[in-house]
Length: 140
Image (cartoon, rainbow, N blue to C red):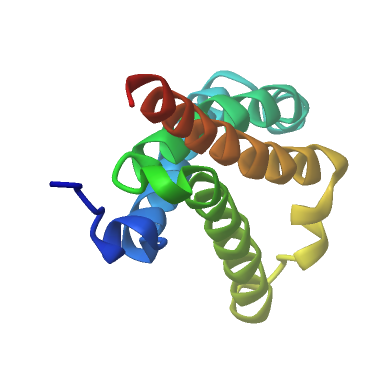
């Protein structure tokens, strides 16, 4: 008897991608907090510009991998979706903050370092999904 994957396993799992994106962002915040505690504000911003982009890639490889584990048929897309959700959430939060918090600007989230970090979230998520697809293909 041939086994057929369930239709849900073939589609994207938006809830799983959302959870992975939120957890990835929380991990990045937990990486950034000690930097602010150790450095003065000007130095911390410079250091974060060096730390956050590569950390974004590493964290989102893991987030994309976890997100894609249940969707081997569309693992690459599932992992990339995780990165997309994280970037969109960051931009939306920045817009909301600029509307309701005095002294904040949307432009603060569009520095070269943050744009690089956002791109690396997308790439990292896709790589995590690709790793799941690769593992599934080698097992099957």
